[in-house]
Amino acid sequence: MQAVQLDVASLNTLRDGFRGRLVLPSDEEYDRARAVWNAIADRHPAIVARCAAVTDVVAALGFAREHGLPIAVRGGGHSVAGFSTCDAGMLIDLSGMRRLRVDPKARTAWVEGGALLEQLDQAAQAFGLACPVGVIGHTGVAGLTLGGGMARMQRMHGFTIENLISIDVVTANGEQVHASDDEHPDLFWGPSGCRGELRNRHGVRL
Image (tube, rainbow, N blue to C red; front, side):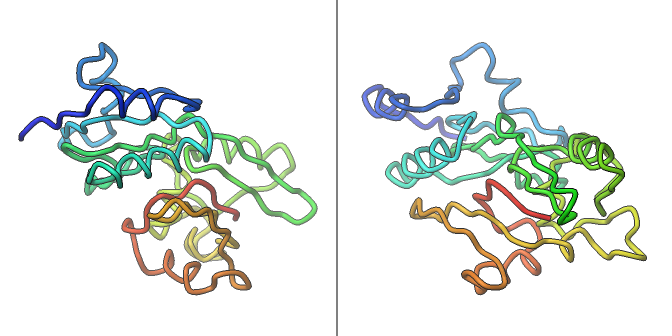
């Protein structure tokens, strides 16, 4: 694998206004930053963008597009197929974006792209509710959902993806889009059949 050379000026421009942290192969924390659950997917991204906000995601995508870097997005990092990492590209790490809100009246939850199942479970249980999600707590909610979602209570409530109400997406050109049955329905249709391939997601509403 050939190392990707990124010029200092471009990296400094990306750092300006970036709320999270950029991790390069020369950094001490690089091996921790690139690690995913499936150790077989031992890949070496050129840069890890540990995003803290949607604006970071937009900036990281713009940098990757400008420099021709392949992109991988990591929420919980549980992709068995290794979709949540890449070689010689931009790894957009959403683990710093784990906010969520439960609306007990509407019986819905809004979840950022890095949130984990255990967080959603705890938040829902506080209101006597439960979500049809998987059983491994450190799996990412977004990745599980967009992969279909083998779920507890599945026989009664279906797959996790069948309970998806809307999704907030950053498109490849950096546009932020809210998609649902009523808004951008063509984009909202995608997750139900794309398995792990619809990327750059930063929030889901169940």
